[in-house]
Amino acid sequence: MIKLITALFLPWLLFSLPGGEASLVYLKNGKLAYQPYANEGQTEAVNQIPDFSFAGYNGGGVALPQVAVKATISPAKGDCRALIQAAIDQVSALPADKNGMRGAVLLKAGVYPVEGSLTINVSGVVLRGEGNGTTGTVLIATQKQQHDLIKLVGKAGKLTLPKTGVRITSAYVPSGTRTVEIAEGLAVKPGDRIVIQRTPNDAWIEALAMRQYGWKADDYRIGYERTVQAVAGRQLTVDMPLVDAIDNKWGGGEVAKISVPERLAQCGVENLRIESQFADDQDEKHGWNAVTLRGAENCWVKGVVAKYFGMGCVFIQEGSVFNTVEDCAMIDPKSITTGGRKYSFNLAGASVGNLFQRCAAWGGRHDYVTGSRVPGPNVFLDCVAENTFSDIGPHHRWTTGVLFDNIRGGQIRVQNRKAMGSGHGWAGAQTLFWNCESVKSEFKVESPLGAKNWAIGCVGKIQQGGGFWESWGKSVTPRSLYLQQLQDRLGQQAVLNITTEEQRSGQLWNRLAQQANHITSEQQTVLTAMK
Image (cartoon, rainbow, N blue to C red; front, side, top):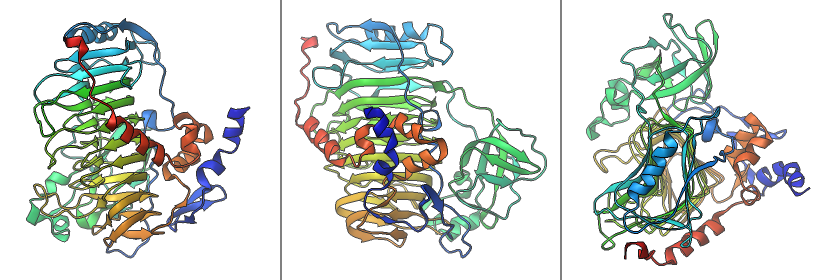
């Protein structure tokens, strides 16, 4: 009966909390309606805020699987790397079931010193612990050099962009659309994988004034991996919306068929505490990332607490698509507080459709962040950052289509970073901050020519930038744009599949902040197993 009541009142709990309405996307008859808008420097209102709901495991709205245990190990004296890796390899050699699962390696509670990296490179393998508390399953990175402790690695995850394709014939392809007109010469059918590629020219670089920072047009041929859903003459309809406009004036674009890389699939890391040994607060020769994904598709990291790593908890790298990171925490990183360090939850490379939700961070610099030229849609949802040292948001070089939905932290920014770093320039386009809060700090939103960045329903101490601002200081409905878009697209069950009851009833910020501060106060795990 309790579950029935929760489902029955789900729309009220999620989407009718007190707040105003946004003008560009708002509830109408229980579903979202979209108002077209003009990009910066333009007058035609033909663009639309994208549907971000495709982010997450299996394209969003799909519950993470429960994978059966096929190998169990307990802590041993000394370095446990070989013991754990052998169990991973044992399960990797098992046949996959009809869903692509081979099995889980269960690490019983206790302390496991690990000298080096653990690698999962066969699909269908899960590494699972018995809890992420100090009395649960604790992995200790003991190697005294920078390294990633757990690596999920596909054989050929990087998407190779074709040098040429069929030209897009539309003079302007708006952001948010799922259709594109192409010239003759490309034979495609529903189900084919394609790449829609912006091919910017020197005029675009000059218009953005980016040449002074070393930008070159060829470096910004950003490819958007998509699947064809329908073909009508020379018009293609794809599965996910475009998250950057393609303007013939700035070089237009191309479409080409692609060979899908051999990615790692159906792998997970679950319910672990992962700590790094360190010499002092500025030590740089120890564990760097707790978990990394490279060339991974439909994988997940859940219930992982990471402490003392130099960079972060989870780093999703090149060519990783439709992965979920949830209920994780990155606490008290140990490294110099400067560039290229302390990125708690990080997304880079040609990575599309990734979801980070219900995560917490303490002591980081860029806690929820993207690298350069990351194509969207990607989503950060219901997350908190405490004791921050720099900003949340896209970091550099034209990342597109990121939704920061109900994120609370210190500085929150999307901006022209100009000469910062090695010439970062415009950090992002089509970046949306929805019902976010910058605690006692700056909230900055700027929009580049030919694109748009938004802050809707956001709160902060200092408001800066000439981007799109609406309902500053007051939240808007729906509470979560991502969850409402997901319900509109796939129905109420999709939301129930991926959320908790606490999450559906409102914001999680206080509980996540308390969790982060509590974990920070816990003592470093004693390596009794090494004595």
